[in-house]
Image (cartoon, rainbow, N blue to C red):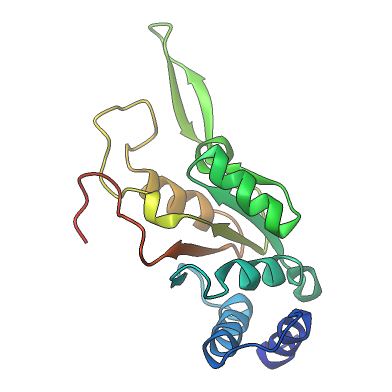
Length: 178
């Protein structure tokens, strides 16, 4: 399948006529999904009501036609429930999907990156503005930076890609200046 055909499939799934900007986003998403390039990120941002939710829902429900899978992630359980509700697919917190517990010699527990066994999968992260790129004070999680760990996890899989979505008007994480 090529990007033009995938774009047409995405466009046909809309229940209304797309705006010029939505149409441009669909074309760029189609190119991103089918590009052989790895290690790149697609950032979908916009104000409330611009159609981000609809675009992601259409994408998730059309990826199978391009022989791609989708994994939906969010920083919180509530945000995961929301993305699951509008896409009709299960969603997970980032922590639940990318970390596994490991017992330490002192009896404590830490969390390390799980192996990414996905192939040709698009990881879609909603509410991305809530993810800090600053290392945490705690060494409970692998390297302390959720963003770094997420990207390492996604790109360790074969043919996996990453899409971040977020609302332009939302506040950045605490202690992070934009």
